[in-house]
Length: 115
Image (cartoon, rainbow, N blue to C red; front, side, top):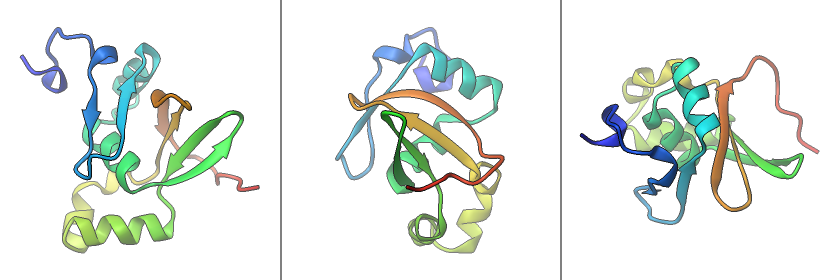
């Protein structure tokens, strides 16, 4: 069974390339469990990594959707109707290490500080 569909394969060793092919994200065991606990599917994480805004924080990149990122995502999904499908995950964030390892994912409850 395919690992994204809940198969027994180890997701930490599964590499995924986005549609543009310019990065590969690996999931840590922690990010897999947090993603499941917080009901953030891999699709939402992929969209976040592909279209989100990256800000450097505490030695890692925090990726989230800001206004320009939402505009890019809206365009990619074909307008507001496409954006409505993923609306519940638009307040998500991901923390990515320098080596591309996805450390954790979650829901933003406050603003991301940019310095």
